[in-house]
Length: 159
Ligand SMILES: [Zn+2]
Image (cartoon, rainbow, N blue to C red; front, side, top):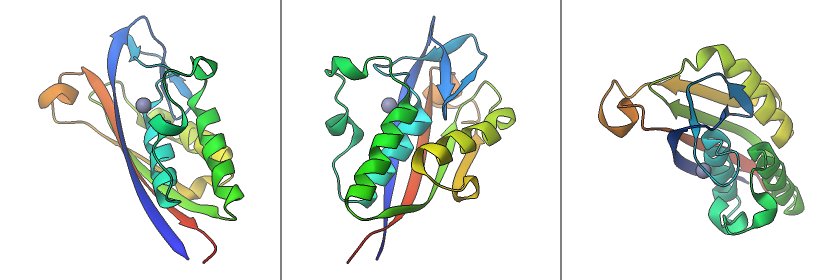
């Protein structure tokens, strides 16, 4: 049967950190704060896939108290989530996602993000949606205080 899940994440933008989105380092004055590389897009997608297979969230599986994951690429988290799906005899059918960022421009990097996420989840890149919008300069996202992401995933699992 086919199951679906949703994911949402947000990280604060700070100085002195690299900005990693979908495994792509994007040149910018600020980067996202977090325990891993703070790849908000990968985290939202990981939560969507975990939700689809009835697992608990990314914070449960990859707690920020775990020193072994400090600074790791969140693509590695996605690979581990894909392995959890395989262990249950399932496979990810597709994921779709939206980034909400006032800046920088996301569109030049979308193809590379899709390729990275697809590889980590063992998917065809055309089954990975990455879309981007701004928050129309409203609220904390609109002031550029952070970047958020939301995602959905569909997973085929045995009955
Ligand atoms: Zn996160």
